[in-house]
Length: 511
Image 1 (cartoon, rainbow, N blue to C red):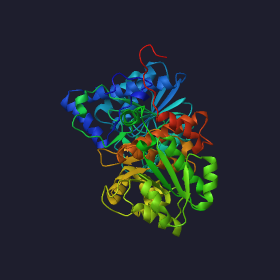
Image 2 (image 1 turned 180 degrees about the vertical axis):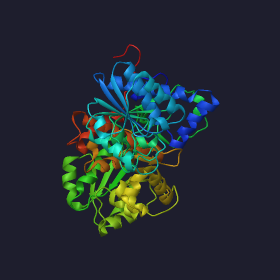
Image 3 (image 1 turned 90 degrees about the vertical axis):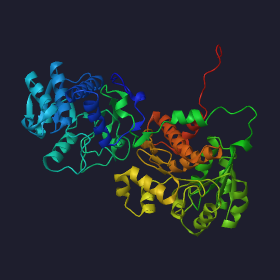
Image 4 (image 1 turned 120 degrees about the vertical axis):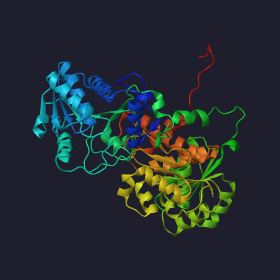
């Protein structure tokens, strides 16, 4: 597992994501099966969190540690004691009477008191003057909306305007889903223990967690044996090594597929063009765009590598479908008669498909593999497809993606903060890359083209969806290094081309 704690272990975050109940099982297994006392685990958690705090805020001199009633509060008392012993002005602000604590948490609170840490009852004004707040209110067991003094404590932490270190998970965030349970702390850094939780990386999780650090508390790897993760963090590097090997020197365009992009109703030709160029930039051998005739001239002028064809009716698609190997359906398609007729023809053609945007409205419910499809809805589209509200989709994105996969028999890419990919091939994947600059028109069209290009080059649908999501997010992160606000989809093209051509080590003595 993670080994000794490092204050900057981002590159070593594990890939497995485990539900709260699973992580509690790891805790029990470490205590009961391997003889590690619970107090030792609590001490290690507090030590790891304090080291992270000192690494992130070395100038901090005053801390307020907001402690709850359970073991998360116990971790907080350890942090307060360590800070006090290090010469910082640390106080523990208790929402629950420390004298009512039990077990290891009671021992940690008493040790803090004995060391001279002031233990104060919670008052919002008690947070003032702190350079950093430590959120030790709730751990992973919270599963209902906060009320009363607990909700007030979370709101106070949010409103005081100081940076926050959260222990294990920001209080008020559902560990399994990333749902905010009424109100949640917004941390700058979250140090999580024993196992990463899905809610840290999707839904509201990324906005609440800030930077996520991990510590395994030194438990043996065997603690996790036999426990399948609930989800995985997308490992694009591994996928890239498998599916984007260097091309043979005798390669020709016929080996890399022919993507047919269908879309671009009146006023939306740019969406189809973005998808087409993304497919070309990511290695498709040929790309044809079937769109409204009035878009053809501008499209060819701007990107002559695309074969733009004007189509007025579904019958015009027949010769284009006959030459294609993959269909990318939906960018700018619209839901009028033109779009519906084209969608009906394309969805019934039997070719592998990436289906996005308005075309999702027309996807039939059916069995997997007839034909292979990758569906790429955003939360609002997913809600319409499932007949529920967007809020319900966002409350449990993993469940929504699984429901879509079951209902439509397809690989599902549920876009959004912490994009979820569910493809039946083991646990679903959550993308932890990407940034708010991607919240602009056309980014989804780009992703459609990326995934279609990978399908055209022989990558299986599930792997194409996972790798495509990762490439898209990585390119956006590279493009946003100069700033997220004002990022355009076209800014990603050069980065996409670099990412689908990974540099390999040269021969010994080479340049």
